[in-house]
Each structure stands twice: as C-alpha cells, then as structure tokens.
Length: 68
Image 1 (tube, rainbow, N blue to C red):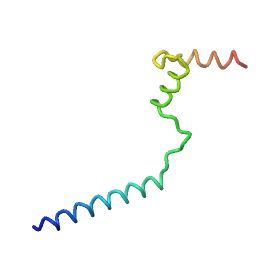
Image 2 (cartoon, rainbow, N blue to C red; image 1 turned 135 degrees about the vertical axis):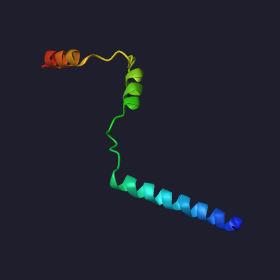
Image 3 (cartoon, helix red, strand yellow; image 1 turned 90 degrees about the vertical axis):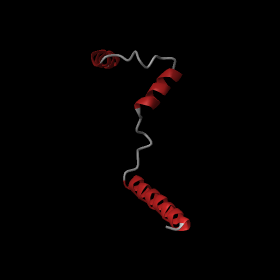
C-alpha cells in the first residue's frame, strides 16, 4: 500500500477516536465538585494531616454526634 494512504488512514482513525471521546465526555461530564481519593489526599496533606490516618466510620459518626 501507499505510505500516504496508510498515514492518512492513521490520522483519520485518530480524528474519529478523538471525536468519539469528546462526544462521550459531553454526555457524561465529570462533576467539578466530585472529589477523587487522590485530590482528597492532597487536600488533607495541605491541611497538615496524614491521609493514611483517617478516622474509622465509628469515630467519624461520634465526631458528628459530638458537634450536634
């Protein structure tokens, strides 16, 4: 096959894949308020906390009840 044809088909394939991904992202945009585990770990480190020492669920519930 001709090199130009192969190159053209490859570029067309990339274009179609990019359009498909953009369309999927348009249908299901990730919420800007949705916090991932990595971003919550970074936020806790910026506050000076250790992200590996998170309270257990029971401790979390107790702290909520104490605040009430």
